[in-house]
Amino acid sequence: MRNIRITVQYEGTRYKGWQRQVSTEQTIQGKLESVLSRQFERKIEIDGSGRTDGGVHARGQVANFRLKEEETELFHQNMEELTALLNGYLPEDIAVLGAELASDRFHSRLNAVSKTYKYRIWNSPVPNVFDRKYVWQVKEPLDVQAMERAAGYLLGEHDFAAFCGNPRMKKSTVRKIHEIRIEKNGPEIDLIYTGNGFLQNMVRIISGTLVETGLKERRPEEIEEILESKDRKKAGAKAPAQGLILWEVKYD
Image (cartoon, rainbow, N blue to C red):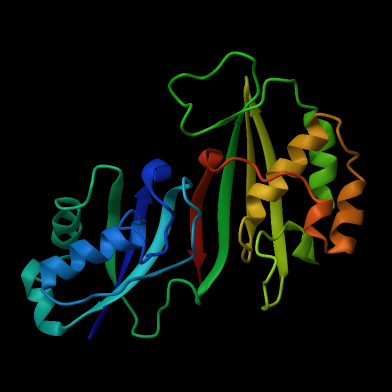
C-alpha cells in the first residue's frame, strides 16, 4: 500500500464541517472520500490533521489515505496527475493543492507538531460586502492593545478546559499556544494562533473572549481567572464560524 499525503483548501460556508457524518453528505471529508472511492472503485477512507467546524474554512488542511500499488497506475504514479484527477471531480469550493508520497508511518493528525489558525474580524460599522462570508463584522471600535494584553495570558501550556466547546471532553484539555499575533490592517483585525493543538471550538471561544476584551466588556487580567476556573461559562461567547481559517499544519 502507498500512503498519499495531500494538502487541501476549502471554502466551508455550505459544509457541516470536516468530519464525515451519517446524516449528511455535506462534509469535506465525505466529499473527498466520495471522489476517491468512485475513482478507485472501492471504499477509501481519509484522515485529516484535525476537524474544522461547520462554516470554517481551510487554506492548508493536510490529509492522508492509502492506495494499492496497482491503483497508482491510474495516474502513472505522478502526483501532479493525481492532483488534477481529484480536482476534476471535486466541487469548486474544495481544491487539492498538491499530493505527495509519504512514509508508511505518516499520519496527518498524529504527526502534526503545530497548527496555525487565522481569525478575521472586520472592525467597522460599514459591512465588507465582498468578504462577508469570511469575516466577523464587529461594528464598535476594538481596543487592540487590551486584546494583546489579554492574549499574553494564553501563551504557553495551560489547561484550556474553559475554552473547550465539548463539556463531556474526557481526554486531556491541556494544550500549548506558541504564539498569538494580532495584526491590524485598516478595518481588518486578524488574530493568528499557533499551537501544538486546539480543542473543539477553542480558537473561536478565545477569539470571542478577546473581542469582548477589546470592547471593554471584560478586563485583560480576567483571562488568568478564566483559565484557572476551567469553567466554560466564565469565558466569552463563541465567535462566528465564518471568520476562522485553518491556515497551516506543520510536521517535523
